Amino acid sequence: MLLAVIAACEIGFWVLLAAGLAVRYLLRMPRLGLVLLAGVPLVDVVMLVASVIDLQSGGEPSGKHSLAAIFIGVSVGFGHQSIKWADGWAAYKFAGAPRPVKPPKGGPERARRERQGWFRHLLAWSIGCGLMLAGGLLAGGVDQAGALLGPATTWTLVLVIDGLVSFSYGIGKGTGGGTGGRGSGEGDRESRPEASLRS
Image (cartoon, rainbow, N blue to C red):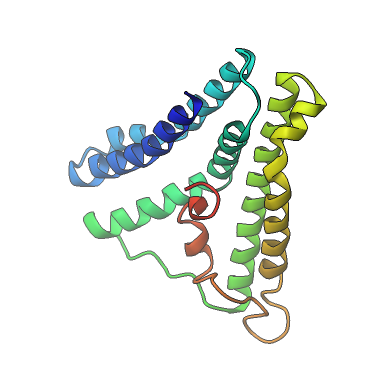
């Protein structure tokens, strides 16, 4: 049941986001569009409540609860930037707003954006791991918390590697030492990193 709720919340996120942008820019109803966009974070509240109810009802702590915690953490850490990024492009495409500025490929500004992105990742990690720990304690104690914290080891490794890459920008000449797959800085991070952690 919880997996179904998680899937529904994930779909609901994108449906609310698309609906909010469509209403705001295509139907020219900005207030209603903002209301729909403001409702996007509510899907994470639903996911959190569903997880708590499942654990309190005697559900055995498992990967699905860890997955819900990761989704919520990533949403809190990156969700606002993702919505802002999508809104900027929708305004450009449908409302004649200026084209969003491309993130710099190098220099101090690129380094600043990379570090800001890592701090958002740190926030997501902190919330996600905190929810895993809290869920385990709610389910019965330290042993249960250990079961839920299984994915935290891999996530911590990813966070450390991300930090090393992010803080390497600006070191040395020009663009710094960042490598591979990071594209255009904040633009990559703002596309809701479900590609790696959430979906």
